[in-house]
Amino acid sequence: GENVEQHPSTLSVQEGDSAVIKCTYSDSASNYFPWYKQELGKRPQLIIDIRSNVGEKKDQRIAVTLNKTAKHFSLHITETQPEDSAVYFCAAANQAGTALIFGKGTTLSVSS
Amino acid sequence: GAVVSQHPSWVICKSGTSVKIECRSLDFQATTMFWYRQFPKQSLMLMATSNEGSKATYEQGVEKDKFLINHASLTLSTLTVTSAHPEDSSFYICSARGLALFYEQYFGPGTRLTVT
Image (cartoon, rainbow over all chains, first blue to last red; front, side, top):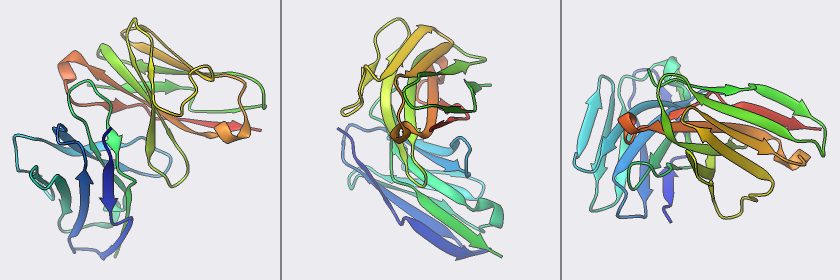
């Protein structure tokens, strides 16, 4: 089955800096890669996703890149703000309708 | 759009009792629902996948007789934790996917279960 590895497990940055979180996946059939932000005690919120026919996607300060050959994808947050502090999860799925398999999460701390 | 609710948001029960958690898609028809559990400071672990009108598919290591899942309608799935024990204490989160949403899955707010 699919296995998703996520690094780093914790990340501390200064406000205004960029943050990068990386994930690798094992199943070459995976073709959907969402990123979720989860605040303590709350549900995961989808912040951006990418499908296998796209190499990069950007939404304001957030971008995701995908390298299918290397089977890895990354989340980039620019101009970080304290409210970006949360746990971020990457996930992968190999087709519509199948469950998401999550990475272990990255705790991002943005200090002002 | 794409709102998923869960009830209850938190529950405390005694060891040996059963607890039912409901997951509802409020504004779309959910052909597939997923149940996850999340321990403190850990990731979401998939427990089972349920499709409307059919039996749930459980992940390896998840006891189907202990975690009963029913997906009787396109807007409701239930998870019943039977004979609960303290080690079942966790955050249980459902997610739902509808035909129109294709890949995207939307999560419920979660249920905090504490077994004493």
